[in-house]
Image (cartoon, rainbow, N blue to C red; front, side, top):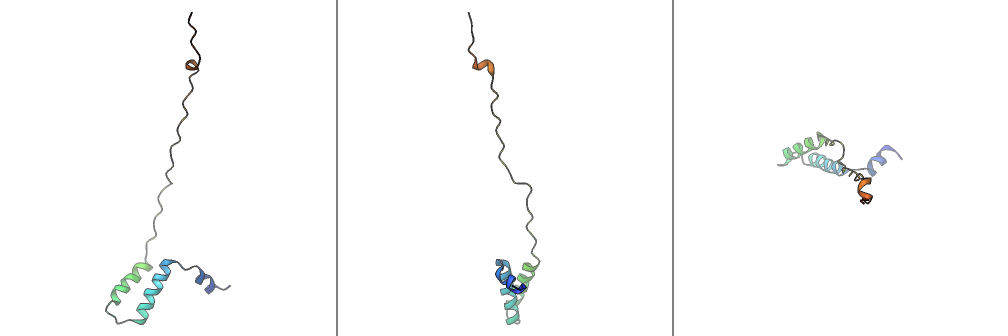
Amino acid sequence: MNITEVHLTTKSREWLILNAVIAYLHHYPDHTHTQEYKDLKDELINKTPVQKRGRPAKRQRKKEATSNTTSKEESQTT
């Protein structure tokens, strides 16, 4: 398997859109929408990566109620 076969099997949605925009600009360089496609191409190429947030939120563990040994014993009053 050569490098072109690897790239053909792992195409992302963004890559396909960028490829379509570049193909459009190649085949229609003088169309009325050319500037819009150039702007879109620049936006796709210079895409800022999504910054990952901090650590994931986790639920707080509930503490078990402390057992009060005096309450469990029956009081012996005479």
